[in-house]
Length: 359
Length: 124
Image 1 (cartoon, rainbow over the protein chains, first blue to last red):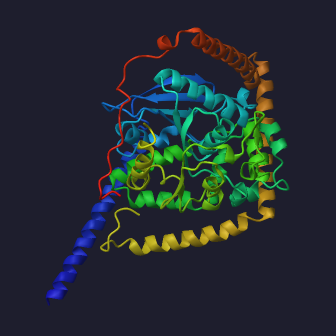
Image 2 (tube, rainbow over the protein chains, first blue to last red; image 1 turned 45 degrees about the horizontal axis):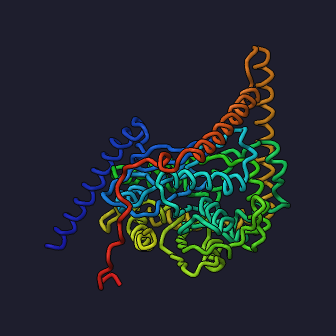
Image 3 (tube, rainbow over the protein chains, first blue to last red; image 1 turned 45 degrees about the vertical axis):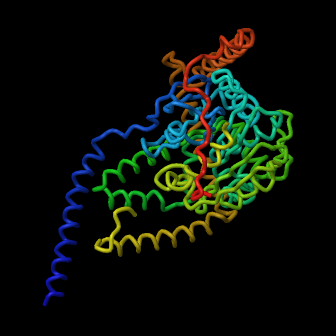
């Protein structure tokens, strides 16, 4: 008899929960469509340098005492930098600033049509060095730590390999592709029998963001649909909806790529695998990974569907640094650096590694 | 999915969706990795780009009729502005080089004296 009562009670509880969530979904669903997108990138900053597609931000210090060596975050060329500052309490930038680092960030605007001739040499021999010079002038410190995410990691790595004389103090890469022949579907799609990159670049100048976004989407063709289902399922949960909208906004704000850069990445990195083979020359300088002697940390995501671990694992193996470490962590391409997974896993490790190398 | 509990009636549906997602993705990955797919997808993108280009040159002709600048004209202007921008950057860099170092470096901000927290025996 008592079991029957318990079962009835449990059923009533479940029904009540379902009805409550359905009502909440309807109310919140209307709110979702009626409200504007939640704000992102809220950590106070100023733009200290701007040139065309390039922005250099300096975040305001929030600690009484800071580490000597400033930190430069180098964002991927395909996406906006606010993924590193997505929400208060879930922002890598905020975490670093509050932990006592002097933080700068290279963020990219969509390249303009007249910037179609920017290539790897412009990004690694002009933009990054110019920003580092700005940071040195601003802080009065000679050394800088670079943290590159995805293609930002590739650019930082090429910069480090072509400037072995300094002033880089430490190099940190998040999910950075090195062995491009392990890039899975991207590798298949850019095969020279399928893709006429010269013709494409000649036709469009800069590679449109739509094309980049659809190639990311094709890596996980069901992700948009399951994302929507997930959103509907959790519409009652304000925290989930807020986070979903921020990450969805970020994923939809994919940036175009300059034509020459796309051609170089396709031909030299993807097809030629020159960064891995040690044959890459940028701006007349060899970008052999063995040239890199500074301390290196490379964080890789176990379930990264964009940069498989086979493509990124070679970095630690090939650099000439004696102080080097690879962190393989649970998570995907984005959850490695942002969101609750990153807060729990990557950030404390990053702080442990970087703090002792920032004095 | 967040908010999951053993009490939730939607768990069965969620599991079914997750399984279906994994199946569709493994099939599509196998399909999209083929040379035929790459050729077809790239050809489709190429046609789409060509149509877009055709549309924009048609639009440019219409704008010229109304004596209005086309995208190409605006790009040419932007290119000239960018050249000026680059010259300004070079001038700025030269000025920084001839300005005494201390004047170029703003004072203020917290001291750069922070040391890493000492590790306790539990941490190590």
